Image 1 (tube, rainbow, N blue to C red):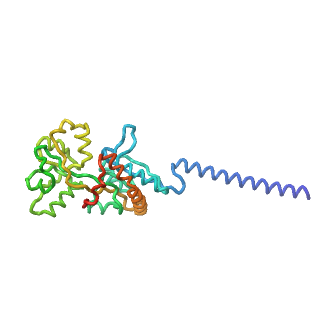
Image 2: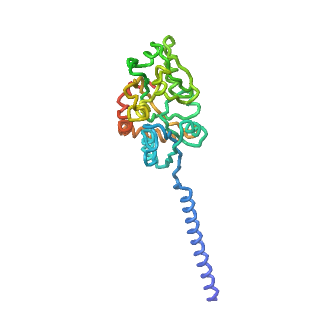
Image 3: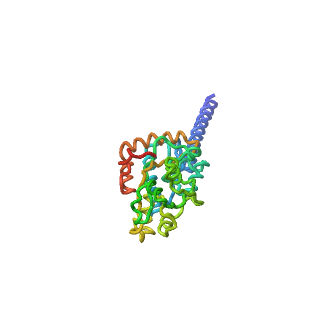
Amino acid sequence: MKNKKFRHVLTIGLAFVTILAGCGSGTSMSNEADANSGSTSGVRKVKVAYDQASKPMSWLDEKGNPTGYDVEVMKLVDELLPAYEFEYIGTSSDDLLVGIEQGKYQVGVKNAFWTEERTEKFIFPKEFLGLSSAGLVLKKENSKIKNLKDFASEGFSLAPIAANNAQYTIVDEYNQANPDNKVKLKAGDAFTVDVIQWVNEGRVDGGIAIEGAFKKQVADDGPYHNLVDDLVYNEFAVIKTWPLFNKKEQKFADAYDEAIKKIKDEKKTNELSEKFYGRDLFEVLGTVER
């Protein structure tokens, strides 16, 4: 009887040890799976695409790391969203747009302006990301031309702009509001043309450019620095820029809105604007119409 009782206790003990071992094994396998997937339980990894050739908005630094105004603001957003982990994917402007629309990327930054057409393909959050200066590139002898109204009044020719480029929309909106003094707007085949070269060669009288791009190419010892005394950049508008979210990412966009509002309240966007653009564009926010 005693031997039977002993065997019964031994059997129960072995079963208990087996259960513990099984639990330990399952936990280990689960942890290993999490490690292999590169994710932490409860944290969602999202892909943030950026135009890697759009300095100072976004580019790869000399160490191969993503940086620029747009990227650094998104890094601050990431810090405030513990439920998300941002993975930055450098790509081209065209691939970024297609990739977000198709869900390859959850969000993208490319100094993007708002357009009605883009609202059909992407989610625009409530809070904008930053501000960008848009201006006319002109030969120095035409530096008196300060805005689109002056440009149109002179009957000047404008470098072609692709119809799907937001810069085209800016000029088109001006033309619709000023039917008696339109800029000669021509849609180009390519997303962008070499505005600097076209103006310098006299193929056109002027072109639309972003201040950051002009500085990179001309003012800051860029490939066209030899033209620094021949060309001018005359700002005619400061425009809000936005991150573009995939249409299924409304919850993510809402989380972004909460984070970016806090970042703006703390003036961190002002500091980054000063760092990457050489000026605090937020100082003129009260005059921004678009």
